[in-house]
Image (cartoon, rainbow, N blue to C red; front, side, top):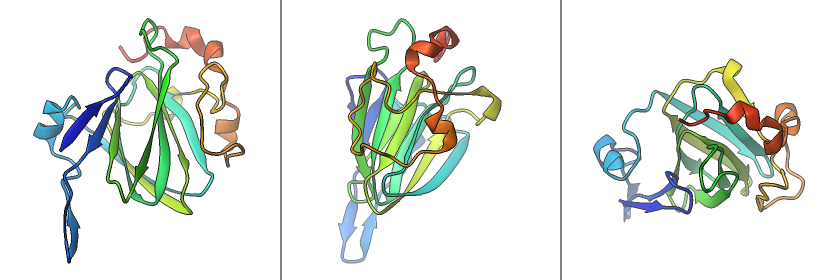
Length: 184
C-alpha cells in the first residue's frame, strides 16, 4: 500500500496493493493501523455511498463547525475528485488538487477536515463510497460554487448536472468570515 502526499498538506492519495488472479482481485479497502501510519486518521464514524450519472458534479461541500475528513473511493465507474483548501491562514488556502479515481485504478483520496470536497462523474455511471471522520449535520453545511474563478478548478465538464443546492453556493470570498476557525 502506498500513501502519496499531495501539494496540499494533509490530502493523501492512496494506492492499495491489489492482488489479481484468474478469479478476480482482492485488496484491503481500509486497514486502521496501516492508514494511520500513512497519515490518515484511524477513526471513521460514518460511511456514505452515492451513485451518479455522467456529467453530475457534486460539490463543493463541507461542514463548518464539525468538519469531516473523507476517505473516498470509487466502486463503479470513474470520477474526477477535488479537494480545496479552506483553512484560513494555510499557505495553500483556496488552492485545489484533483485526481482521477476509478473502479479500475483502485485509488482512494483522503480529504482532511478543513477542505471542501467535490467530484464530477466522467464515466456513464459511478458509485462512490466514502468514510467520514465526523457525523453529517445538515444544519452545519457550507459550500462554494463549483466554478468559482478565484479557485479555478479545471473540471472535465463545462456544463455539469448540478443539484439546486450546488447551483446556489456562494463564491469563496463571500463566506470568508464563516471560515474563521474552519478545520482547526
